[in-house]
Length: 466
Image (tube, rainbow, N blue to C red):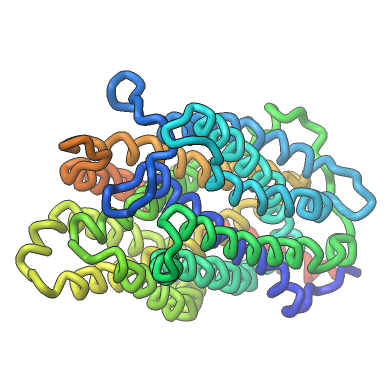
């Protein structure tokens, strides 16, 4: 008989999300800021400043190429995991072997060693971006695929994802405070470049510890006693899951939701410092307000989603997020109206965005696990890896779109040799608002009730037969 996963082991398994929050913060919030710096940051221009076709920056090109190459590995790793016959299980061996490359690669991205504006730096950054994203795939696709197998109850999974997201958001809050730590280090006479690198090194070390603990949290075969490996070739498996109407509808909503979230995270520091005129030294307060309130909302979201459904909460989150992007577009005008109180305006934005932050980070993963469980019951085949690959693929494509578009759009209206223009920063809000509105429409059409009803009916029949 299959054992029930103890809560202490569940919590240890979630520690990997601490690393994910730190590393996603380094890439999502600061990669562009580090390699396409403002004059106020004091960071030298490490990459060439040439623009392909007159508007695509080197940073946009590098991240785009990295994401495209990385995306190819998603279904491949998913298929490897689903069909794996390792003595320790189908999933956990992948975590153990990819933990160290995942943690080291994210740090090396920011350690480009060559002279300012060097092509060699661009090659260095591009190489380690590919290593980072590939290692992420090898770690998180099998890890996420294991969740429906070790936590079969849909309501229990909401609790699991609440803990997981709390770790993720909590670690993200430390990453948002990077500017505070950087300024402290600068106070000791360290230049801006190495102040940032020292902070990133500390976060990478913390992340490495967490992924190693998560990868060794339990023995997979103690909690997964049987499964049916898919016999279909890779492309056939992918084609099969896209015949699932519930999956396709939710997939589209989740994709657009992640794109809008990636836009916000990528450009958030620019919104705060350029539009709202909040000093960089105080920007971490705005970020922490969003994270802090989001963490407080976790129990409320978990409780309400169990009572009213996850779909209802996601629809509400998408509405609020769309309104926030309209607020961002007029951010500079609002800042002028409250001159001298810009920080309070920033804190208000942080509080408002907290609910979408929390809901969009907790609930989509739980919805996806429901869809995976229904598919496994309906067809008698465990395709968790392929489903997990598509979920990870969503995140990567979202970040790729955000990086490429935000980097290029923010250069619109730049003057006097600057890399970022006020008009460009405002236009990123327009793009993100459109994606957020699209996610709202698809979430509305997702039929959550039928998915949960099917799972509950099967559980009742299984209990009666037992």
